Image (cartoon, rainbow, N blue to C red; front, side, top):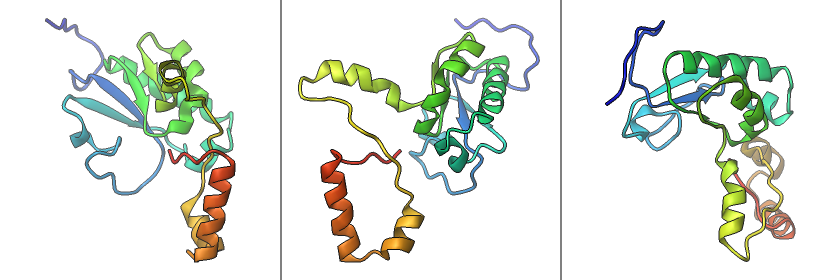
Length: 161
């Protein structure tokens, strides 16, 4: 049976806190950012100013805002923290050190586990391809698509996170 205590929180019972990029777009059912995806209560925390471009650039100034948002989720009573962007893996250790609850910033945390489970699986290079830039530069041409396939074959595939 859960134990409830008086704390500085507006609501109770959230199992998981999810840190969100500062992004406006549709989050359809099944997406991390849509509460109907889960069969349990979740609490979302938007990290103001945390854009995908800043995360991909490895902006060290993001760390403070991410850690602060995680601490706020913890103070609201969540029992674990995750995020809506796999590339937030680079902030895993900072958040883990700042809170006393489990932290899973990215599904990429599963790579070592999967590498142990399968003999022929070895982590390879992961990269991000901006679909908007791909459309502008390649215009969806067959030649552009073939070039992308050859590049993916050379690099062992691509991962879209």
